[in-house]
Length: 409
Image 1 (cartoon, rainbow, N blue to C red):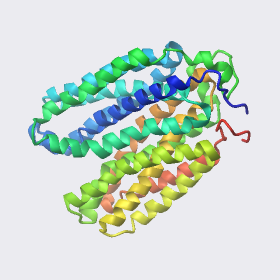
Image 2 (spheres, rainbow, N blue to C red):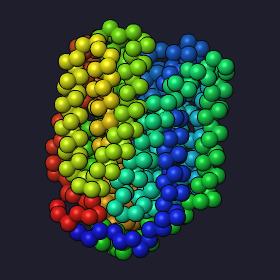
Image 3 (cartoon, rainbow, N blue to C red):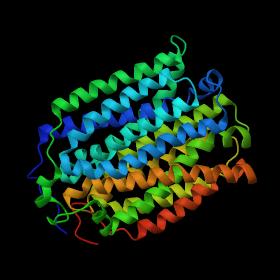
Image 4 (spheres, rainbow, N blue to C red):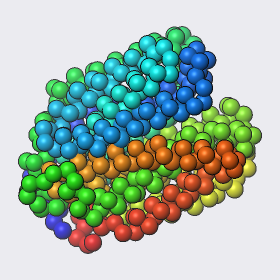
C-alpha cells in the first residue's frame, strides 16, 4: 500500500483550514446541544411532553444522516467550499430561528432542516481537513476538529447557557449562537480552497483514477465495516447521552447538581479522547488503537454499571468511556473511511458512514433503549451500549490497516 505524498500539502494552508473546520464543527456541536439544558424551559413555555422532546431530538439526527448520505458525494464532485459555506450559513440561521419557535411542530421542522445543513457540512469538512493535512498527522488534525463538538457542545455550552439565562431570555440565546456561524462561513469563503479531491487522485493511498459513482465506496472493505462500527459507536454514545441522566437520578439517586457534574465528563472526556488517540494512531496504526479503545471502553462501561452513587468514580469512568468512544467515532468517520477509498470518494465514504450511523444509531438505538428502560427498568439502560461495543469490537477486528506509514493489511 503506498502512502500519500506531500506534493499537495501546503503548510501555510493546513492550519488555516484545520482551524476553520474545527470552529465549524464546534459550532455544529453548540447548535446541536444548546437546546439540551433549555429543554425544561421549552417544555414549560411551549407545552411540550417527553414524547415531543424525543421527536425534536430525533428530527435533527434523521436530517443529519440523510444529508450526509447524499452531500458527501456532492462535495466530491463540486468541491468542498461550495458545500461548506452555504451549509454553515444555513445551520447558523436555522439555529437562530429556534428562538422564534411557537410549538413542537415548528421545533421539529427547524431542527430537521438544521440537521440537513449540519449533515451536509460534516463529511465535506472532514475531507477538507484531511485534504489540507500533512499525511502523517491526518488522525491528529481530524481529532482536533472532532474534539470541538464535545468540548464546546457538551462541555462548555451547558455552563454558558445556564449563566446567560440570568441576563437574557432563552429566545435571544438562540439568536446569539447564530452570529459566530455566519462569521465562520464568511472566513471559509475567503480562506478555504475549493479544489476538488479529484486533483489528488495520484496522491491517494488507494491509487484508482477510474470513474466512480457514490455506491462504489462500499466496494472497499473498510467502508461497510466503518458503517457497522459507526452504528455501534453512535448507539453507545447517543443512548448514554439520552438515558444516563435518568439513570443517575432515578437509579443511583444522585441530586440534579451531582448529575450535572457527572454529565460534564461526557464533553471533557470526548474532547480529550479526540485529541489523544487519533494522534497515537498516526504513530502505531488505526487498527491497534481502535482495538485498545473498544476493549477499554467496554471494560469501563461494565465497571460503570457496578458502581454505586460515588460522584468522583462515576465522573472518572464516564469520562473514560466517552473519551474512548468519541475517539473511535473520530477515527471511523475520518481516517478509516477516507484512507480506504480513492481521493475522489473521500467525502462520499465519510458521508455514508456518518449518514447511516446517524439515521440508525441516532434514531433506532435510543428508541430500543427507551423501550427496554420502560419495560425492564432504567437500571438496564446501559446494557444496549455494552452490546453495541461488543459488535463494534468484531467489526474493528476485520478492518484493514490504512495509516499512511503502514504497508500491512
